[in-house]
Structure formats: structure tokens, C-alpha cells
Image (tube, rainbow, N blue to C red; front, side, top):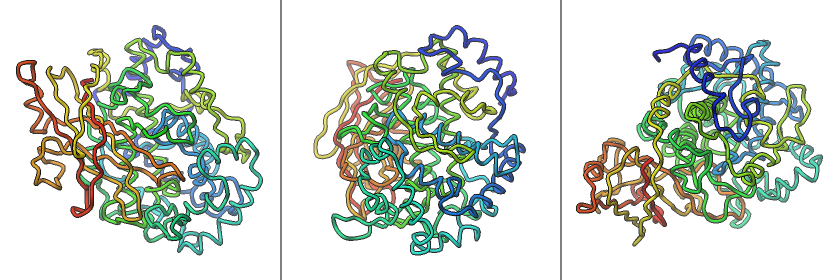
Length: 534
């Protein structure tokens, strides 16, 4: 970076007062003077924080399973309540990580503790320190609890059942919306048991045994090329480009789908924004072994007990940092950082979040999304990482996204014809049904104008646009389609034709899916496509 942290803070704060915000900055904008700073995990300050983090993990692992700060109990907060594929994704995780950061601060004996962030754009590999001691879930400190499923069940299930029985009506309503109408249904997702077939779906098993709890290792720390592409500067900048917190056109929306609740899928069409569907989902999946360990069982990061792996909080600190980067970009441009429609805004802020735990061990049973829209709530800011400087160029350009061009579908292949050259980054949206079954794949490559005989590609292929990936198991009784926003890279063969597009020389993009890892596996049929210039 060519500027220091103070210069960054001054440059962004200078325009905050002129921002057209639906909330005052004290509620939804910049922190005037943060008490804590989240540093890059590769910095000296970040590495020092990781040592404090390890101290806290050791202590929290040793707490009894019915203690609200027990390491695994914390992971069950995410398991029971986490939103994905909807517009509460960012704000829920800000509350979850924020409260847990305060708890780690207490147990680490470091009064200045703040989670380091893993900037996988600048460093597309797990930081080396995350393989030290209890910073990896394969460490011996986890073995007494996660040796195997029987061991974990005997340890954790009785305490979780007692917690379940003590839940209030409002909490139970949230779990009902999630499909957990009984404790047995909840525990089925721990074990992978499918009551409809009477069999175990190993891929949906949230539990991970110690020796298989993380795929990446000190000797193999790198993200694979396709996951690294999802974390690349071009992909992340496409995710930061939208000028609206939410738009039904997901390519131009910073957040994913607007839904009736953070615990339900939106009918038959979950829409993943670029940042959630690309780096978030694919990093989770690859660390958990999707691909190399297909069809499961996977490591912790692939399903909803992902916070058992300590790297979860570095990954989500970076996702939260990108939300902060986007917010600052909007403020520099004088654009809203939240929905401007009063009804939409009310729907966003009043959503109940009822399962968080404070550092003093009490439960947050009256929380709502509006409590966590600002980093002010937890008094932190970020040392600059990728995107902080780069979004200043977006603010200077201040382009307006074009209307999406809707394509047609035939034989599981989408086709879009464009009659004008793009004026900015190009994002395709691809709608697919989530595959069902114990051996169904979770990740699929998006191919553009590939010859019919091409059924598998590498990340540097001129036909490879990106990868779409489903994170976590399908929720109970909620079969659905999903739409993914996928930025189209410059390396595509189709890019040259796009750049020369005109009414006299239209360009047609044919978009289909192929299995990412297993060449013989079937790929879902494309059910809808659009192409949009941001």
C-alpha cells in the first residue's frame, strides 16, 4: 500500500459528513476513534494477536460443555442460527464475531485483543501460524473431544439437549423457521443422518474428526488455483463495485437475497452476491476438503460447525473488513450504505438475532440486526488490506451499472446475446438447482463458449469463468435453486468479442456448468442466465 493507516482514516473520514446516509454515521458509518484494531494476520501485530488467540482457545476447550464459553458451544451458535445466501449474512456475522472477539479478549489475558484478518487476496494461503498448536483443529488439544463421532456425541449432546430444553418461545420459533422443529432434527445435521432414507450423508456431517478436521496443512497451505481466482483482485473488486446495499439484480447488489427471515431460504431462488458466493463459499469449502475429500466426510469449514476451526474467525474478519471497505467507498461517493426505502430498511434492522453470547457469559436474547450495522458496536477498525486503496478508484469513476441482459436456456445451456460493448466489469448470473443426494457435488465450473467436448478445465483455461459452490448442507425440507454472480475474467476467449460488440456485430455467450473435480460426475443444468456490465 502507498499510504499508512492514519492517512487512510483521514481520507475517508473527510467526506463522511457529506454522505447521503439513511442512518447517521454514529449508527451505521465510520468509527470516530476505535479502541481496537484488527490487523492483517501476516503483520507483526497480527501474529502477536494469534498468540493471544491460542491462549484463549486452550482455556475455552477445557471449559465444561455446558459452559456458554465452551469452544464447541460457541460453534453451535453458528450452527443453529447462521444466515447464508441472504442480506443478513454480513450483519449477523458481525454480531457473532464481535461478541466472540470480546470473549476471546477475556480468556486471552490480552486487553487489546482483536481478531486478525486473513487477506486471502494478498495471501492466498493459510497463514503459517494457523498451524501452530490449538490454532488448527487437528491439534492434540482437540483430540479428547473430537477423536470420533461417538466421543463428540457423548461429550456435547447432553449439554446441547439441556440448552435446547431451556430455549424460549422466540428462539424456538427461529429454529422452526430453520427446519429444526425437534432436537433430533438438529442433531441429524451434526451426524449427517438423513431420516428420509435412514442413511448417513457423510458430506452433510457437520462433525469432523480430529485427524480430518482441516484439509490444508503446513505442508499444503495454498488455496487451489480456482479458489484463489475467487479471491483475486478482479473478483473482489467486482464484489465491491455495486452501489446498492441490496438490489434484486444480484450482480449489482453488495448483499445476497432479501428474504423473509435470516433462517429461511427465499422460495426457489437463493441469490449469492459476488463476495459471498465466490471467496466466502469457496474458501470455506476448500479448507474443508471439498474436491480432494469428496463426497465426505469433510473438515469443519465445509459445514455449519465451521467455527470449530479457528481459521473461521480470520476468514470472517476479512469478509467483515470488505463490508467496511465497501461502506467507506459508498461514503466517499455520497451514496447510501443501507437501503433507502423505509419499508426495506425496517425489515433489515428489526430481524431478531437471539443466540449470541456476551463475554460475561449471559445470553443476548433480545438482539436485532440493527444493533450490528456499525463497527461502533464493538469499537474496532481495520488496518488497511486489499481494497482499501483500490476502491478509491471506483469512487473516482462513479459508474452506474447497466440493466442486466436476460438470456435464454435450452438443454441446460444458457445463451445471452449482447449488442453493446461493456463499459466496466462484466458479471454473469447463473441459476442452477442444488444437486441432491449423498454423492452430489458441491462445486461446479462455469464455462463460457467452450467447445462441446470440453468437460473439465483448469483455472487458466480461456473458457473458464469461475466456480460456483454451495456452502453447508441443504436445509431441512428446503430444496431450492440458487443464483450465483460470477465476474467474467479478461482471459476468456469471449472477452475480445464482447469488447467489439455492436448492434451490427452482436456477441453471444453460451454458458454451461461442468464438474470442478470429478470429470464423470453430472453437472446441474443451467436454469437461467443474465449478463450485466457494472
